[in-house]
Amino acid sequence: MKKRTILLALLFATTGLSPLQAQKKYKAYIVSNSHLDTQWNWDVQTTIDEYLKHTLVRNFYLFQHYPNYVFNFEGGVKYNWIKEYYPLEYELVKKYIKEGRWHISGSSWDANDTNVPSPESFFRNILLGQQFYKQEFGVKSTDIFLPDCFGFSYTLPTIAAHCGLIGFSTQKLQWRHHNMHGKSKMPFNIGLWQGVDGSRIMAALNGKNYVHEWNGGDISQDNDLKNTAKNGANNTAYRYYGAGDRGGSANINSVVSIEKGVKGSGEVEIISATSDQLYKDYLPFDNHPELPVYDGELLMDIHATGCYTSQAAMKLYNRRNEQLGDAAERISVMADYIDGASYPANTLTDAWRRFIWHQFHDDLTGTSLPQAYTYSWNDELISQTQFNDIIRTGVGSLASCLDTRVKGTALIVYNAMAAQRKELAEAYINISKEPAGVQVFDANDKEIPAQLLNWENGKAHIAFSASVAPLSCSVYDVRFGKNNKSSFLKATQNSLENSIYKLTLDTNGDIVSIIDKRSNKELVEQGKAFRLVLLLGNESKEWPAWEIQKRL
Image (cartoon, rainbow, N blue to C red):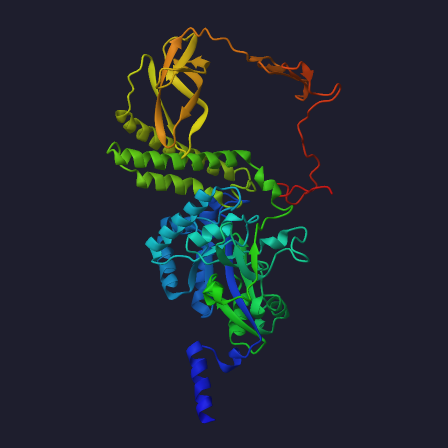
């Protein structure tokens, strides 16, 4: 009997649990949160001048007075701003990270929207964040931490898994208006989320309110935590608390509740946790068949549907930078390979960092106040200029390998895609006098469709049909002069006509006639019109940029 007592004592010693803790029926991972919207109802200047400073000072105070307090904070760009604007506090952040008190969550350069950006951008967001964390702090994050984001794409678990990440958490699915999984708004509280390629990460989908507060009591006896744990795998809950959306810290009463709960006598074992501790405790996931698996999207139903069209300029600039950034990198590799131009690693990284933090979920989604977008657009356009300069330099260096001996003006077209492309290309070419027309010839001296669009201040704006092989450059010969080819295209203020169709608009801009000239048939019913579809009378007064209220 004495030997058994000794063995039990050794067991509790090796696991770090007291006999009382080991016998508790429920478990709750309590995750602090100081959510800081980089831009929302304020601009980035306010974030740097006020909210970042408050976040630092308030959490430092809690570290000094409450030994069980652990702080979680996401967004590499915010750490970069701390380094630049608050260097003394930055050294303290490094110290607390080493001590395990300040935990880097989220992995990415900023807490990005997961639906609008391309998968390439998502990968880069994580890559840029992880590189910074490794370089500055000697650690890497292991999770996707998105308490406040507007739905989550099917690509997220696949991208996360391929980046070596193991978990994801949120509370935003509670913002769905309707149940989407039986009697619930989410498939489970805690389980595994499977991506498009079968990759899996652990997911905590019911973090509750990320600005939750407690009153200073012993939360090991908290009934809400107990009930949440009952609905989780293995009687376990994952629960946010803290502050948002202006950063800061949890209030003192909440931290006191954590201190009491960790040592408490209630039924719930309280763990003051890092955002990824739950996932680490369940590794390897294959050893836990009790975890439910969800395979599919985790999108919103009404809240956030408006984010796909709000602030359309941001979507345009973001997509253009995604495409230009990829094109710039590919041409730079080619140019470096032929010793034409050195690979511009620093400039590429700078340009990606500048625009990609604007994929933050209140920025790219179009839900920030108007003045914030003066900063967003400025950064987007600077990055576009950087990428364009890199592309121009790269293509220029490749010109030395191409045969540009043509009768007119040599024009090089670059295809950055890994597929054959045939589409309309546009160019501006210097010519002192306004030309009567333009002709364009390919490398085989075959004339291709071309058009002079405009001439102004010594520059001719032309368009032509270009066909370019994958990841390559092609040379075209542009000759100005009289163009004898006639065009079937006719356009007036209210009509558009080619060799097949004639389309007519009324004063409202609606299509009142489409004539198929091949059969001389009218395709629009007499007295009817094809009208633009407009959704009027949106009933969402509180969240007009987020929500499109659908009438059922």
